[in-house]
Length: 306
Ligand SMILES: N[C@@H](CC(=O)c1ccccc1NC=O)C(=O)O
Image 1 (cartoon, rainbow, N blue to C red):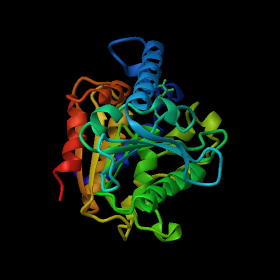
Image 2 (tube, rainbow, N blue to C red; image 1 turned 45 degrees about the horizontal axis):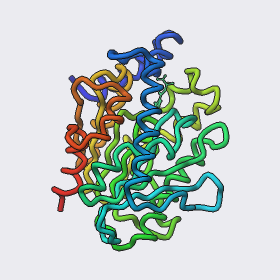
Image 3 (tube, rainbow, N blue to C red; image 1 turned 120 degrees about the vertical axis):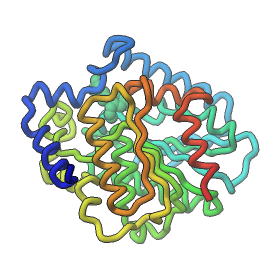
């Protein structure tokens, strides 16, 4: 199958969907299989809250640290037992369609990662309606620059995001670091159940809070920019894992697959993983478990790379 043809066909496919179908495709909780949609969303918040409380009670941390001048520009850092500044830093951007979620309920992976000597940074950004997509992307860029400036001896910065947070992490592949006066030591990207082309979202109910125009969506779509990018502002040796759950929606599968293909064609060191038998929410809440396949993949990415 010729690749250009494939991407045209799939782009046409969301454009041809009814409003209802598009809405369902961009509602991950409609596709969960083990519990109802509401129970899933409740369980997700509950596990996130509990993991965060546990992380704060059991790990050395620096909480609510400003990385910029605005009130919402804060992050939490959780440390391994043995404190050092020469650590790998795993930086997490939460999901919630750029309009829900918070750092205070997103420290899912702190326990298993800090146990292996990784510092975990959980970033807050101004969600809609307070923040626009452009502002969120700028805030996330600032947060990464902040980590590099504060920990110049870090042993690598690994950016991870979930869903809307994976979009924000992916936008860092296009960031203009010179504007921020620092080049972060980016060693890996873990993009979990993400959205890389924002245009379909404009036509869903999610846009009531986001108020994106088609131009805003296009400007903030890494899928669009990387297809035509001439330069790679991040070291091309940096490993990018594009990950999707078996029970993510077909549109989320398409977006992840196409983003991976674009990275691969662009010469990035990218891989694609579909994780068995997990939905959009379990894929993250399972990160509380040290034996979960994705926890192990993250550790392998951090420790088996030169
Ligand atoms: N309203 C969405 C919620 C959702 O997509 C979501 C919720 C928490 C964390 C991430 C999410 N998805 C993308 O950012 C749903 O019901 O599936």
